[in-house]
Structure formats: structure tokens, C-alpha cells
Image 1 (cartoon, rainbow, N blue to C red):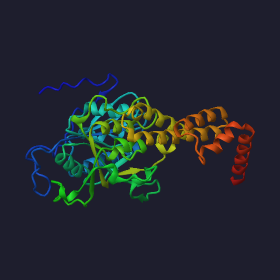
Image 2: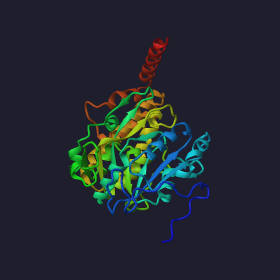
Image 3: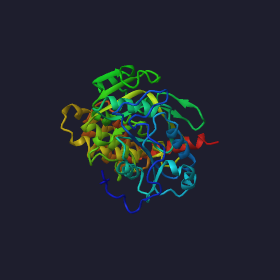
Image 4: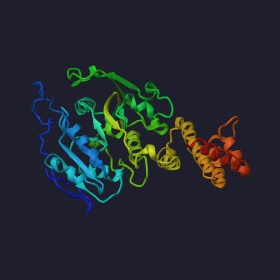
Length: 384
């Protein structure tokens, strides 16, 4: 059957059109240990976007090549790197499809990967992260057994820059406690699923359900732990290309609004910590809050579900409170007053409320200036 996919943007140049490593998902191919793959086993396209991470990306690719379940293809989308990424990838050229485009951001790079992908499933891996052994085998077994699942993610480990590892990475992201049993309407043990019971994988619980409302409250999906069903992705289900942050958050929400999703309470991925100016942890609070408000306006603000309206107002108010505090720290009482007004529109006038100290500083400039002077004085005293 001819390939009817549109040609990639003119800014892209493809160095290797297909991966040379044979896919394990092929019919009749034996898995290590002598077991035959099921006839309906899906194929996987791995999408790795990268930008100036030459020193990190090879470890990411190695973790894919070490998987028991081999992918159909590995697509490395180079978003206009200016470092030695291309040189470092030279030894891998026969085993990857290397696609280079002008610098348009992580969202655009992942979207090009979706466009180019040919597998039944798409697994995303950021170039600074690593997959744990068995990641693809476990997730493919779940997706094969549960065709109703469109998006599958998992817990993850955090590898700090000092080499130490923290477990339960998803819980470090949560802004409020996550009630898994209320978020998901179904759960099952991994031992109950075909392909996992005899796979030698550690047991875990799979939570399945509607996560669209939960995503309004906080992001708990690590992109590198995520696998999606390609046929489930409608044209509007793409990563945002016009936001400075959270481009993946919008993608997950759009998929979750239409389809069922699942979460594995076992780690499949290592999220590596390193010194990188584009990492979310290094972004300023104002950019985070304004981008979060933009996301809410694009998605949940139009949600007809009344049960979510209270959480919608709460999350909006939290962002406006952040903006009010940051405006006062920046000695901008006018912006602070505007943010306080927006906060009150969301929350109403309540006593006590964390906004009132900020409001007092914003509407009484001399008081705000005094607090700023005291803060600067204390900072000078702390300096060696």
C-alpha cells in the first residue's frame, strides 16, 4: 500500500529513511526465551526530539536499543542543534531515522515525529532521559491487550546531577494529593494481563480511566514515560507549538478529553537532572503562571462539565496569586493590583485569604516599598 503521508516541511532533511534493526513486533518472530509474539502485537515508533544535547542523547538511544521489545523505528528529530549532536549520532545512523529541522521548539519536533511515525504505537523519549529495561515490552503488552487505552504513562525515577536517585518521581510533581482511585474508574494487577503474567516483570497496578479533569489540577504525565496509540490521534491532538512551556500538557489533555488513558504505578523511565537553561525547573514563575492560564483558556475554560468549575476557579486563582506576588517583588504595584482583581474574580472576597497581604502591599505603595527594602537588607546580610 503506498505511503500517503504528506511530505515533511522543507526545512527537514532525512538522512536515513528506515531503521535497520528488525522489529520484534513482526508476525511469527520469536521473543527471547522461545515464546512467539501474539499475531496482533503492535509495532512501535520511538520519537526522540533533541536540541543541543549531544552529550546526553547517545545514552537515551542506547536505552532504546537495549529494550527486549525492539521498535520498528527510532526517529531522532534534531530541532536545529548547533552543538556536536550530528557528529555524536554518526555511529547510530544505520539504526535511526535522523531528521533535522530549523529550530521551532520541542512541540514542533514531536509533531514532526508523529507525522513521520509508521508504528501502531508512538513512544516518546526526551533526549536527556533514559528508559529502564522492559519499558517497551510492558507497555506494548498493555496496549495490545487493552485497545481502549489511547495513552499510557507511568511513574519514573529522578536521577539527580550528583548521581543519586529518587523514587516516586510523579509524586514530586503533584501540587495537591493525587487520589488515584477517584481519578481512575478501573484498576487491575499486571499479573491479570496477557503478556505480562509470564514476562518476568515486577508486579504493579494499572489504573485506567478519564484523566482530563485531573490534568486541570496538575501535570503528572512524564512525556518520556508515555506511549500513545497512533490511530487514536485526531488532527487536533498535537503538541502546542506556540507556548514557551507545557506544550506536552496540552497534548495530553487533548487526548484525554476524547479517549481513556492509563497509568502504571511502577517506574519505566529515568528523568535525568542536569544544568539546562530550558528545563522547567529553571523557568521563572511568571512565565509558568501565564502559560498555565493560557492553557486553561484554550481547554478547560470551555468545559461544559459543571463538576470541574470549582477546580477551574481554584487553579486560575492560584496562578493569579503567583502573578500578584511576583509583581510586588518586581516593584510593580499596578500589575499586582490587576492580578489581585483577577484573583478575587475567581475566588470572591473571603476572610482569611492569602491574597490580602499582597493586596495591602499593592494598594499602599509605601508599605510595599518598605517590605522590599527589608527583603534586600536581609539578602545583603546573608551574603558572605
